[in-house]
Image (tube, rainbow, N blue to C red; front, side, top):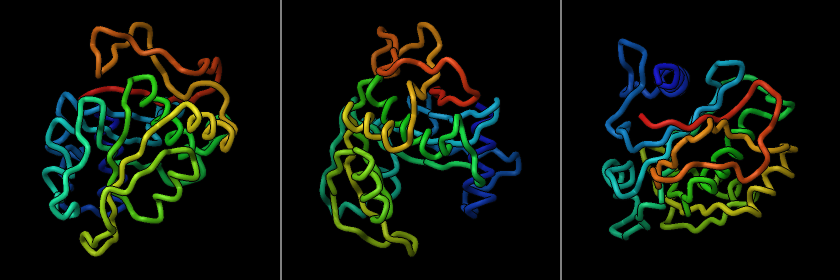
Length: 216
């Protein structure tokens, strides 16, 4: 996990300037990095080049504990199969994995992971312009509220649902062949510990890049 914490500090603190998260040890960790948080890290030649985090909505998460005001008193979907999608970023530079942009591999991997783990939808707080990007790449998106200003930036809460047709659209748009996930034998499903995870597409047999899932 230390590689992930350091990557997050490099990206969110040193690159994007989120000074409230700065730590002397160079590790970016917050109160939501508990053992139920799911971390999806994109590795390229053993180096973290992309990352995102999924938080269970049945536990404290950003929308419930940090900025619930953007919902204007309205409720939002919560269940064991609904997660909040946060901390999504890719390292700077033109990083290609098997000829595919690292950002495209990461986004495809998020949808694939949701499908294999049984996550039915994601709650996302994002800029309005990114909503259309999600729609255009196959997510079924519902806006949960109106755009509002948060720390000087526009933000809108949405619900994004994955699907097999959406995953196929990702593969077609980005020319991705096979699975983006690295699932070791007998890796447990974080939603259903009694079950194991299995790819919904054939695994790639070669190439230095993969998306790996872990908990804190």
